[in-house]
Image: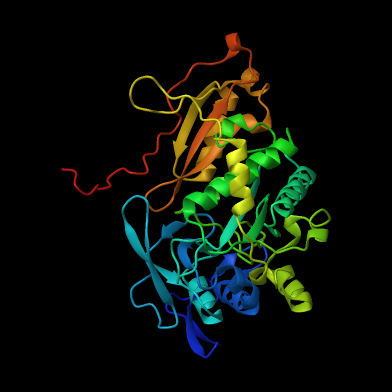
Length: 412
């Protein structure tokens, strides 16, 4: 029996009463976790979760229709939010602004969970200083075909580069396939310098681990390597923070680790249920991160030594578009990931001989940010297919337009 839409319960948290609507609604069918279970989880791990997300403006990534549907991204804090939710107004590079939610206690975590937010997506700044990040984020994003041991090798090289530049890295599972390394920094530099420092770190990791790691921004150029994603430090970006529940069937959690655990443990070990036990037994491995504040001076000096990163060629038609150096064809644009994967399989079935030559990293399914939700672009890199056998660009199997019907200010 599905729960009544009018059902509700209240949690007493941090001196506040937090309403949980439809508390018996099952969010994760496989482990049988309800909305109330998820709110209680965040209360139980609040000390750790607030270390990552507390006091920071947050984009609300809401799964209001469950795991089977794409979430929507809500920058603006809902009207009528409780008084224990602070706010901060962020100004974006696009020229827009948004008053975003700022969570400061366990009650705030429970409230955000009730909105359908599985993971927490805070900015790298504190609400008190929105222009100077106090966190550099190293996102190790494996390409298809990359195994855990290679991710760990790259993480250890990244740790070495951080150590050599006077910085302390704190590892956590991303909650999917990769690893994040968090670095607390003095809030002295603006976003451009922090992103440059992150890009420099990525380039140095690639220099020390060629073939294992890459700093190449364009996905089709990475091969079967671990991408050190420096652009997660751009002004408008957010990353799922520590103890975030990820939208995978097993209710996996982005979990802080000690460095001596990184090689031995696996992301799939850490779920809502196992992390509750782990946290109760040992607390937060990242306890102490806020005292390990470093300087970007050494990385920025290294940036000057390395010189500007190589830029891709641009088209000569005056549009300034980047020209890919790889033989790419586009297969589909879809609203959901299952549709994207289905379109890719349709294309491969129609081109069996070509598909047999593809490497895992040649199949490119990318989540693209639309106006308020993700959409998906499907491409194929034909680099491993002999040129005479490469199929031409064909009509897209699906051609979803994420901006259809959207009204743009100032345009008639």
